[in-house]
Length: 335
Image (cartoon, rainbow, N blue to C red):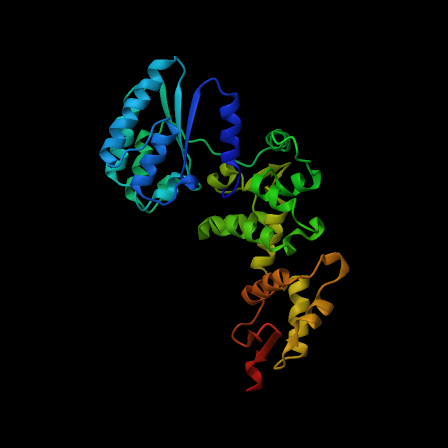
C-alpha cells in the first residue's frame, strides 16, 4: 500500500537484526536508469561506483563475496519498490540479479518490495522475478502497538493517540494527520485527502469495486490482495477498511449526494450563478467554526472535489476561476 511505512520498518529492522541488511531504495536514486540502480547497489555495499555497468556488476559480485567471507551472518539484499523500475527492468537485469544471488544461496537472501502484485505488472520481465521468489509476504499497516514502537525511535516525537487510531497503523497517514488542524474533519485537509485518494486509485477498477462494497457494508468477503496488504480487516463478523477515513472517502467519492461542505459551496455558487462570487463570501458562507481554518489551499481542494464529484452535473454547470478574485458558476440551462 502506498506510504504504509516499509522504509521505516527496514531501518528499524536493520538496528535489531543479527543479519546484515543492505537496502537498495529506489526513492534514493537520482533517476530511474540501470546505471543509477547499479551505482546505488555498489554504494550500499560499501564500494565506490565505477563508470561502466558491466564493471559495477562484477564489482558488486566481489563486494558480496567479500561481505559473505568476512562473517557468518546472512546478507539480505532488499530492493525497495522494485516496481518503480518496471520501464528499465529487462531480462538482462534479471539475469544479473540471479548472477549475484548464486554467490551463496544459503547465506544470500534477496527481498523484492513492490506496492502492487508483480504478477500484474505490465513489464513482462518484472513478472519473471516471481521465478526466483520463494515466498510472498504481504505488508499491511502496523498494529497500534507496532506503530508506536516505530515512532518511539524518535525520542522527540510526542505520539498523538487520535492520529494513531485514524491512521489505522498507516505510517505516512499518521504523519500527515499530526499536521492536520481538525482531526474531527480530517478529510477536509487537502493533504489527508490526497493521500487517501492515492491509496484508493492505486488499485485497479475491480479492487476498487470490492473496496467500495466493504466500505458500504455490502460485502463480507474481499479480494485476497486487499486483505493481505491490509486495505481490509476483519472486525467481528464483518469486514472494514483499515481506516475510517478510507471508508468515508470512498462513500463520498462514489455517492451521487454531495458531502456537506461541497453542498454548501454548490449552493453559494448556484445562488449567485453567472456572477463572480468573491472568495471572502465563499469563506463566510461555506466554512463553519467546526470546519477548521479556511485558506486558499482548502478552498482549492474543496473546489476540486466539487468539480469531480459524481453528484455534480458537469453537463449542466461549469465553474470558472475569476483571476484570483473568486469563482463563477455558469448554468447551460440559461442559454
